Length: 81
Image (tube, rainbow, N blue to C red; front, side):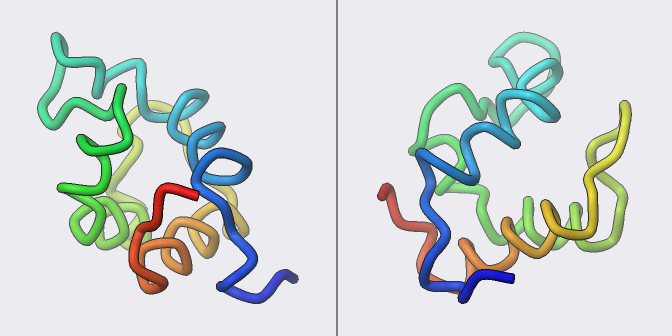
């Protein structure tokens, strides 16, 4: 497993969001809008909380590794890297 500092928004987090979250968080179906980095960053703590509790995504699921990656990214400042 990678160190929390090694997770990148572009490489690790955005692909999870695009494949598992954007269907609903697309600015039309459900707020907040995760199509942009800023939309996700503004809601990063809540996204971490809801994914860790396995409340989100409502459709499908995230792997334990994906949940850990999101949590690490948020804890590390939700950087646009």
